[in-house]
Image (cartoon, rainbow, N blue to C red; front, side, top):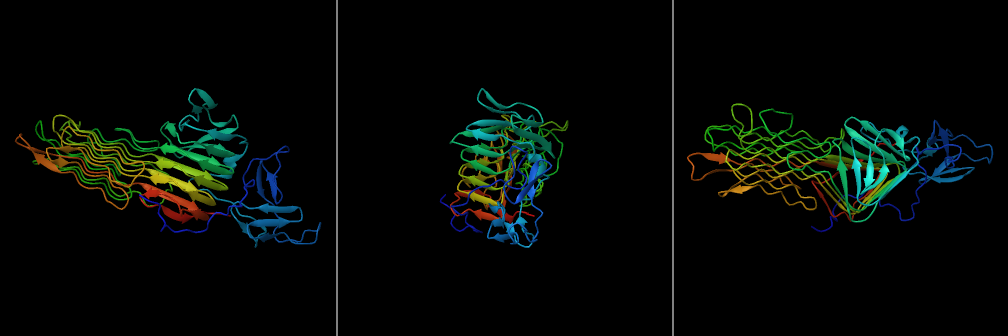
Length: 442
């Protein structure tokens, strides 16, 4: 798919923009704040100048465009300048983040093919340890867990090259920079098999119902059963295919608005062919996509791929019904200035076929729906992608007396770009379409 030229464009990032220390950057006697800011409690804050007359030169502190002008010089404000208050504006991050998390952070995370452990705080590059496990600031890089999110903090993140960055650990991943984040590579936070991605939910294996997860399909006699429903997301998941008498699984409900606040991963598909003991004799559901947030106090430049796809549903060899596909996860980019030239996806996974055929994982790089597994001409539901809704599983009667159903497709997840100046004029793709919203500043 070609570049999306019709996307809304708020303001292009000026080519001459030079990053400066933002509000909230760490500071001390050896690392003072720039002119126009003061070091308070270990981090930079706006000088309490108001529009008061500066007695040293006889002119008031004032704004000229995005620059704060004082007697001591000129400061380019990362999030713009408030002339009424005579101070720089600063990003107010969502999801419970605060510039106080940046206090004491001195390191820059630079590298290719890094692995982030969102549960322990460890960062490594192959056999080289970048940051050890543990909370607080270690090796100049901070880590804390907030509301199910593993939050890494640094002065900046420069994630280079065309390699894949991986995530271990069960928490959603947040990269939070005091200045800038540049990303070129691939982040895959999607579900794998029956497991959810980081911050996502697992697929069903029994008769337990969870909010937004696809409902299980009921089994009949040995060799036939109904399919499980697909995981819910920005829409409802697809329904499982029916069988003779047993109830098909209903798709998980629509549970994720276009907002990524709070930051939550996708939901798993329901199991197929659950017997009277509450155990799936058909296939288990696919895991939901995970969740990731890229947050920078100054700017984000992204040329890579970030994907949070749902996994495909499972299918057994006995024909007892296929599992539903997992729903797509969540992706958030948040900064005063954001430029995206890459790919963002949160596609749903495909439902499994009625027998012996798994559903496809959601695509990382296209808006093509994930395919459902196929058995005897009947398929599981397609996953939601782009503007396409997930579809229901089909059923089949083969050489057995009874028919059996495939799993429903998983729904798409959520993608949001929150900024003041957003440039997506050369962005290749988002699937589903990203919600472009205004970030909060003070």
